[in-house]
Image (tube, rainbow, N blue to C red; front, side, top):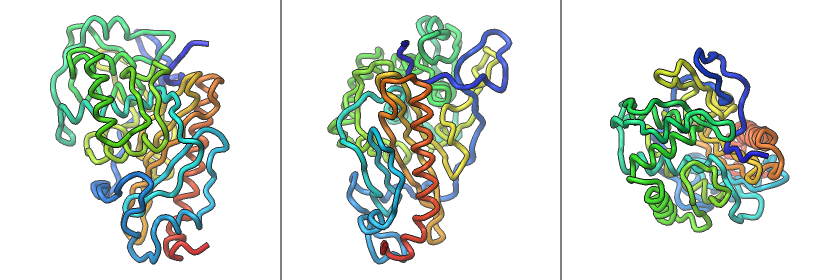
Length: 334
């Protein structure tokens, strides 16, 4: 079975006039008010300050919740200014497929920062990226050799339809070559305390790129501090300039139940993987909820794994948004 970092989605709503693509469609999602407050959560699995009006910290709140954790793989969830809601599954490194691109985007934005809403730097597509635009074994997005694209549009084409060729193009632009960029990814992971993470490529095609749910939660927390990153992962559709095609975000939860991001990834060895971000108003203040689900239905098809990861994420998000406010109001009492 081919090793594809993201399972092909249903046919796009806008049919390409030049060539068909087996990658999904999407449209811009307005960010929730108060997202800029995601700066208070401390280290992974350490409760931050108790929620306003709550007499207990995250441990008591987490204990009082009956979350529908996935029966396989691993998962971890935390809430802004409240802390961890728990971790399930053995936190051993597993392949993460296109979830890898969260780090790729994070490093690009760290080295080449942008203002919210701005196009960013100009990047010229090379022959390699153009030649890799069409593939039957991996997800790609079309670019034309010699054409200049904005940094923002390329980040969107990498994160929304999960274009592997775009990830590699951005890496070559950002560090001269892909190997040098991978080194930056691992240096950044170490700086974030991601002790069980190893990046061997920039797109997620390599099954040797491995991480854990708790490590990816550390990265998601850091990445969501960047307003541009938040805008990009909340984008529901993106057009490929000059290619007459529109892509839908691979994150099928986006726009539902307060979900405002983040990134999917699926392959046969990795199974289905989903890093998600959602908002929930708690005591009158919008809070950011972050979660990671990894290694769902590993060894099956990317489509089956992706469906399992989406369902696991949906179940957790639905239950947390429905029960967390009351749990905090009770002070974590069961």
